[in-house]
Structures are given as structure tokens and as C-alpha cells.
Length: 156
Image (tube, rainbow, N blue to C red):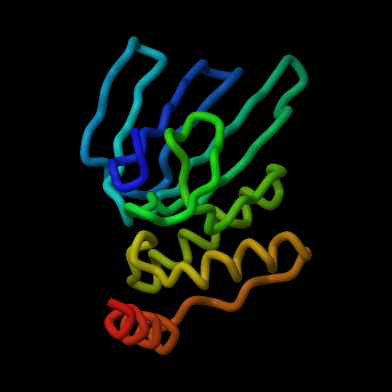
């Protein structure tokens, strides 16, 4: 795969050990490898959220939420485990407390009537930075969304 092609996102599900799922995003293709593993393909420009949770005998050992944007041809990207060739990282949240808070923020965005994949990428970066600092992010509202849509239209 090269940048500009769809990105491939691998997901595994070993109940109680390793659980990976897509919180939002619209895949264009899906390949089932077996009952525990699958690969989803996302078109260039698509925004998605992948949640990764690992547990052991004593509970959660690692949790992570990644909000990613599939790169278009010629755009820079970051390599990530299970994402081929890579993606632009809009937000990366680690630790179950922060992941749970990020999931609540996604729920609030949906409750406000916005589809998370069309939210301004700057807002996801803002969410990442505020959660990393232990602060509450500003809510996403119609004014911010309208400004993003205008900026996006001018940038095309």
C-alpha cells in the first residue's frame, strides 16, 4: 500500500485479553481472517476512532483510543501498529480514565447532533492536548463547526 490508497486497520478480539474496535468511521471494505481477526479499509481522508484494550488476570493492563485520518496521496503520516501504511494522528489517548473521558466526549458530540468523522480535525487535536494536560476540552458547537466547514471549503 502507498499513501493515497485506502489504509488497512487490523482488529483483534480475544475476549478479556485483547479487544480492538472502531468507535466511529466508515470502512469501505472488510476482510475477515478468522473469527477473532479482521481488517477494515478506509478511504483517503476518512476519519476514524480505534479503541484498543488489553487485560490480564488482574484487570486492565493497557487501553488506548486513537483518532486517525487516512492520508491522501502525498500527505505525511505516522506509522502505527496495525495500521498500514499509517495515518495522521489527530488524537491519541492512553490510560483507561482518559480513554473513558474521550469516549464520553465523542458521545457528547453525537448528542449535539454532529457526526464525529466530520468534526474539525483541530478539535480532535484540542481534545488530545486538553486530556493530556488533565483539563476538560471545550465542547464542540455549531459556531466552531461552521468555521471549520468554511475553512475547509476555502482550502480546497
